[in-house]
Image 1: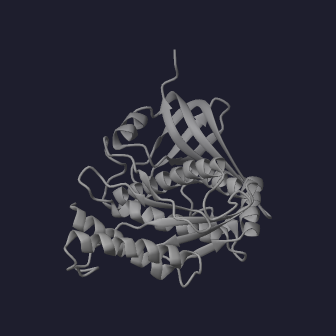
Image 2: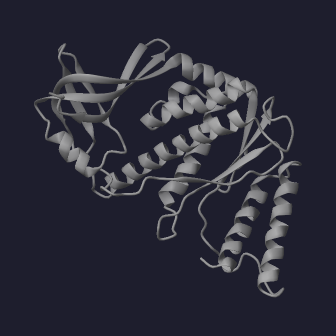
Length: 314
């Protein structure tokens, strides 16, 4: 991609962010300033003869997270510990959602798993816009310079999920089946970090209207996740009873004769699938993620995710 095309991409992206800001008195001025800078660079590059946003281009989604609260004392900066923790948790959330989207796509294409050597999803921090300090992200392109639509979709999925988490009328119980299993721990950490630092969150996306999670909503969601959803990683010895190729469900009979049933993790490849399937009816050491859900009227329910299975060490 040459400089001219890159500036066109940047300008179009800023225009979309500007439209989604919906007249916000903080966001609109800083977005307008950045858009003017892009226009000036394009004019300098092309000798003043430039028409913005033509021809139309298809862009990967971007998301900006704007923070306001005790750990964001002004519009110029942020508590480094808050920024660092949020970057780690949000990046992990993106990677798990993108892997889940890849796995669902592979299944629709008649494959059970991701292929060996498929690059891991990556997220780029592209800007720190000022004004209720912000962090702006976009999916990283492949070696060919293209961004996977599945990874752009992952940003949109995260926006929608956080919007539901912050809804005063929404029930977290109804979200259990929607959340990718390995997304839950970083989601818990992300919301807990916001709550501990006493900040609210506003999300601006290129494909969704802007969404605000008040501090009260953040605290409520963080407390309910911590209280009602317990996530643990366990190593269990037992006899592997097999895995279904189409659905990814597995059975494991523990040494205590307890039958554990669940699904396999999204990041396992087709080759991992073959290796694990070869353990059928054999003693194995399984690494599991156990999610215990406490629901009103139904008590505790556990769901299992198979992270890996191998022969026990000798």
